[in-house]
Image (cartoon, rainbow, N blue to C red; front, side):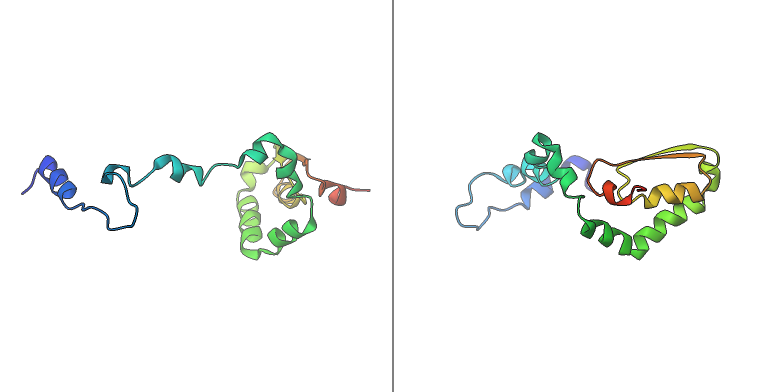
Length: 129
């Protein structure tokens, strides 16, 4: 039976040179962690101008899409209504409330006070007039 060091060496030995055109570098450089992580970071325009992010939630379309996602909306509702002991007589702060659907679920689940906060313009269409 191979010990850990022998196993690591045998794995290293199985790596062969790439046949890709213009490939340069050793197998140690094939995976670039910085490039990989860059795929999951927020683009600079959002960091420099937060209005770009919030503006993406200004329109009805994105909210309609989320509300029509029956599985998603039902899961949120079930989470609130099946855990009423977590909401009963509590104060809830819903940051980024959008249309306020989760705030309404919190009220229905027994929250004493619900503060629904939204920066995007969609709030102008959902607040009482």
